[in-house]
Image (cartoon, rainbow, N blue to C red; front, side, top):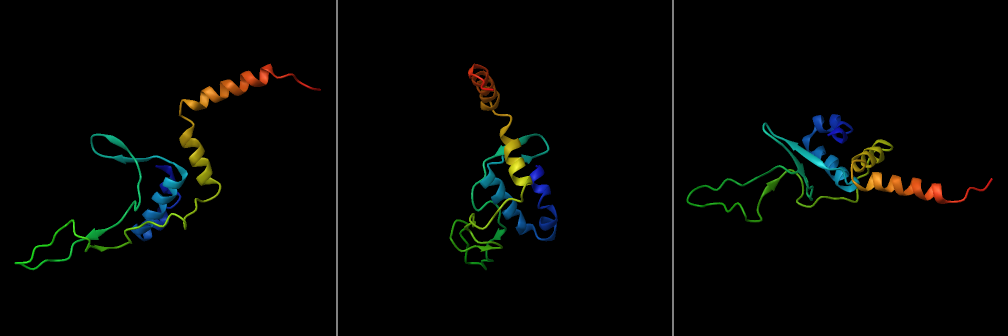
Length: 123
């Protein structure tokens, strides 16, 4: 999606910057999409958005439990939503554009036009 283009250079430098991109999209209410070979999916974003984790090596006879709390991750398991801002003015413009295809928009435009046509004009 186009909002990734705003952060593309930072993501190319370090993939963990993708969390900042996804956090901003979450705060702006911009939908996320995942493209596969056969279909496209609309995704509901949820914190921590992005992480790279792996399990510690368990030498036999020990076995590691993947659902245990011990994981080695590149980023924290909690995403900080207070320390992210969308770039101005592109962030606000993308958030507005993402909402323009909802059914409420033409209904609101019709209501505003009808209300303004009914109001008396003062000159």
